Image 1 (cartoon, helix red, strand yellow):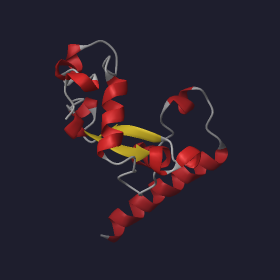
Image 2 (cartoon, rainbow, N blue to C red; image 1 turned 45 degrees about the vertical axis):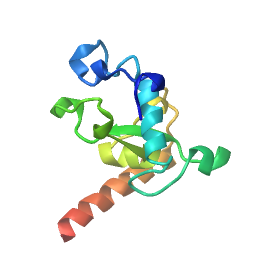
Image 3 (cartoon, rainbow, N blue to C red; image 1 turned 90 degrees about the vertical axis):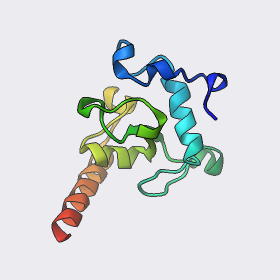
Length: 125
């Protein structure tokens, strides 16, 4: 399904096989994950891509097992999440918009709210 034609090179599954945080074929991997997950956030169900038109959610490919914890860039370790869920998973704003300073108070408030809800759910269990 995701062979040479997709632009994904399996040698880059291992993070030590390339320089930098993301492999040279990251864009192809990211798009393959979105397609596999039907352009739908696997946390909240928000949709994007051909399903949502211009008003769709900003999607991210998230590592289920982080690189820091030994995770790889293999497609089985990647899942589609929206910007807000990704922020909540990490507990801070994520993505290129964060690096460019484009996040705003409402976005940060949503992140804090999601993190608080996650903590409460764990406490209740």
